Image (cartoon, rainbow, N blue to C red):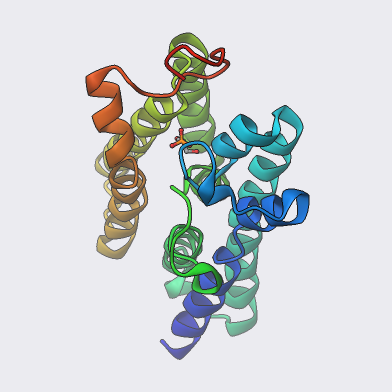
Length: 213
Ligand code: G3P
């Protein structure tokens, strides 16, 4: 259990490296949380600094999730405790997302965890990750709402994982809790977006200045 706790802490610390905040400060000396939607994430980087920075932030935040899951597998291999896997990876996944959303180094005010969750989910089960990503990206492309795609992706992830557990008759309580936290936290972090979506004032991707952005 000490090994799991240590892995969880390291995952949180890695997650706390929020690339949108770092890059925005490097680029303009300004904090991304003072621009656009105020969110510390790739979408707001795209909105504020353009496509290239949006993509770079997205990739780095996805990579952060991937790295942490790889690290958790390394720990598992070294510790040789097979029974704590895959649970250790799920716990590490939750912690890296928590770090991204509530970063230790940036006053606990981070992003919504979409990119980092994607990296984690792809590593935990790439087929599930791929299905969720394809549907979420399709929703984003059609509606031009990144938030709507993200929210539906979070909900879909929980449903797919639960169905998977039922079909394979392989229910692990810790794994289930982690899945619900990953999807649920992603949705909860979008509470302001949900309000804006309902009132028709949500930012649209690629909107011109002046119209509802
Ligand atoms: O990247 C998170 C996305 O789903 C919404 O971001 O900046 O429009 O609140 P934002």
